[in-house]
Image (cartoon, rainbow, N blue to C red; front, side, top):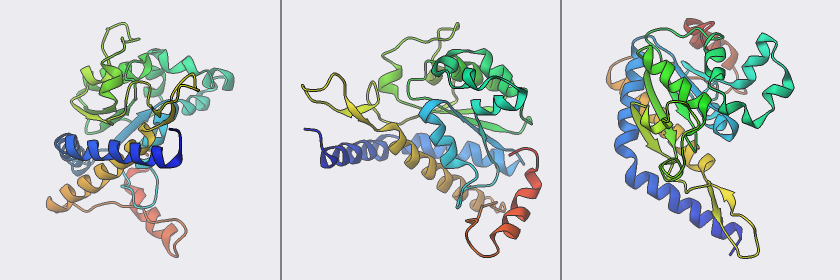
Length: 245
């Protein structure tokens, strides 16, 4: 049956699966990323397509940690690349995209990265993971293991994202991402990765914060821009990372 109630129940089941199976991975990722921030590093977050929503969940938002930086294919506009090229959905398959993006950002040895891809198969994501790992950065990935283990890599190495990352968090979504099906429809509807992804992102924020507090490290948090005094507060919080986020 296709209904709001059916989707809500399926989504709650997926969230429960995250709770039951991914705590160890979330705790491990958060500890590593807290160490990055404690050392003065920035956590870079990269996703393409709808996986960009995960990076948006972490970066530059109220209640979020300041040293979170979103990498985006859209940033290639800054170097004069054509808008039509950026809108091509196949761009995430091009490994060279990772190299072009890395030229844009101030990435330092103490930094870490979260790379998000439901399928984990496309060239730009795998190449970014390989490049960051080769430079000695902590690489966390969020992916659907059900999907990724059932498809081949589109990267020349033959590797998928989960095969490169230091810590792998499963978003517990199915092959193809969508949940609900009907014999009257040609494909399933209602995707889940954005829902479980947002929960994983906020769990990471909470756990990174807890780790920093336990290390007696000042926690740089952003206040909602719609609260009185927020502009001055946020300017103070972000000054240390100017040019990096």
